[in-house]
Image (cartoon, rainbow, N blue to C red; front, side):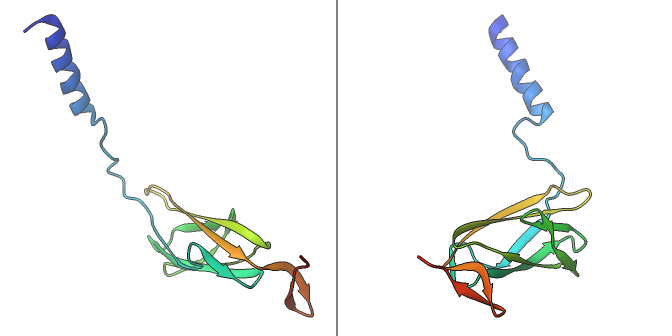
Length: 123
C-alpha cells in the first residue's frame, strides 16, 4: 500500500471512530404547535399559541416570552400586527437538545382596541 493510500485509509478509520457525520445520541425536545397553523389568515390582533411539549416539564418560549406549561401542554397569548407575522416558538429541557418552530401568519386587523374589540385598520 502506498503512503498516500495508507494515509487515506487511516483518515477514513479516524473519521469513522470519531463519529463524523453522525447525530448526537442526546434526545431532542418534542415540540408540536397546535395553533395557529403555519400560513393561517386571521382577522384578530391577539392569537393564542398552544401545543404540546415532551418532556412535560420543558420550558417553552413564544416570541421570547415564557409560555405557561402544564402537563406537557403550553399556551401563550400574543399580539400581532396587521400583515405578515412570524412567531418563533422554542422549547428546552435539561439533558435534551432544544427544539424550534416558526409559524407564519397573516392578520387583516390592527392591534388597536376600540371598546375592548379589535378595530379594522385604515387602509
